[in-house]
Image 1 (cartoon, rainbow, N blue to C red):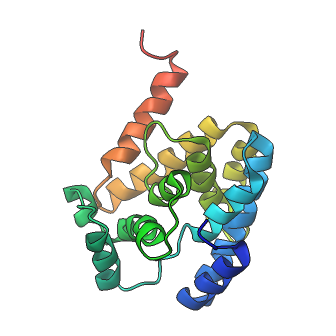
Image 2: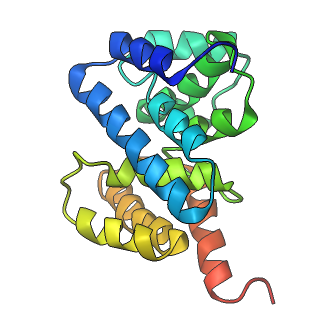
Length: 195
C-alpha cells in the first residue's frame, strides 16, 4: 500500500477530520472488521477501508472538487447537483492521486460507500453497511440495521435503501442512479433473478 500502514492512516485522518468524524471513521473501521470476519473477507483490509472511507468528508467543497478534477473524474449531473456525494468521489480520488494507493478494491469501497451500486464487491458491501452500523450511530432503526447485518448483507442493504431513498425523495433531493440500480438488483435477486 505504498508505505501506508493503519497507524499512518489514523494519523492522517486525525489531522484531516473533525473529532466527531475521526471517531466515526475509527468506529466504521471496527464495524468493517467485524463484518469482514463474519462474511469471509480480509479483516485487516476491511479495517483499512473503514478508516479511509471519509478521508475527504471535512474538506471544503472547493477542495473536494479540485481533487476530483485533478484525478480526471467527471461528475454526472446527479453527482454535480448533490455536494453530499462529493466526499466519497473525492476520497477515492485522494487515495490514488495524493496517497498513491493503487488498490482498486479500496478505491471502489471508498467511492461507493454513500450511494452503493449494482454489482458491489464484498468489500464495497462491508464498508457501505459498516457506515450505517458504526458504534456512535443512534438513528431510529439502527438496532434493526445491526440485527439485519448479522442475518444477511442483502437484507441489510435493502433496509438501508428503503430507509434512505424515501428520505431523499421527501427532501426533494436527487436520488443517485447507482442507489436505484442497487435497489433494483436486490429486488430482482429476491424475485429469483431474471426469468
